[in-house]
Length: 157
Length: 100
Image (cartoon, rainbow over all chains, first blue to last red; front, side, top):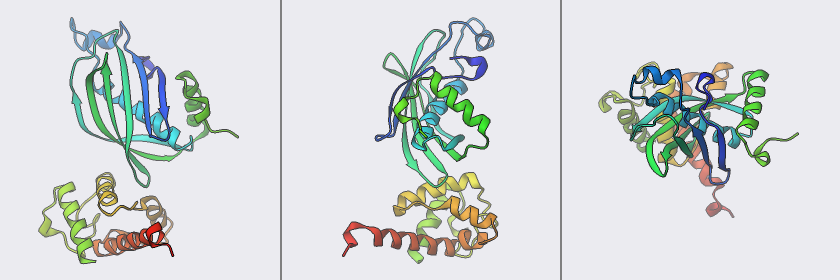
């Protein structure tokens, strides 16, 4: 995780296009200014960042399914449950799967666990639109490489 | 059409917490019932599931934006019911069970 840049996932562990599932890892930093305020003497990764981690994970799944032609944007968060604290230095496993693919929107379910124990889950809805500009598309291409997006799932040509 | 309308009205009432008896076939989902585009995603999801179709929201929105259709054609509930019936019929016509 690079919290300063809102990079909340580190690497894709598994991407299954057929099953419409994804698994990623994210290493919570040992130190960050966020922990100075949340909370003093009792550092916890804020729930909103856990939700964002699940959104980014789901987003990469959707980008893969849409062959890098469209960009998903988080539109709705439902049934978000913070089941346990996430503390500095923990390694998060984030799983997401597609629940429904509508016209211009997709719903996913996502969950975060640490050492096999659930920490949170939510149902997320995304709107998606064609990439609004080449700069964003280029940024997503670069991020895909950084997080180990599978080469065989990248669009070619 | 009436059973389709009833299903849609039930979905809208439950999804958007709108009293069921205020929802009529002539209700405009946006203008009369105050449903915004985000809430309509929930409704579309429920309709997709209930009828086994995929409401072509993007296509409809594009047609309205291009001036080729009016919102009434898609979002007045009796018209929405007709569109859904058409989509269900089209899906049935494409089903392998109906192949000749």
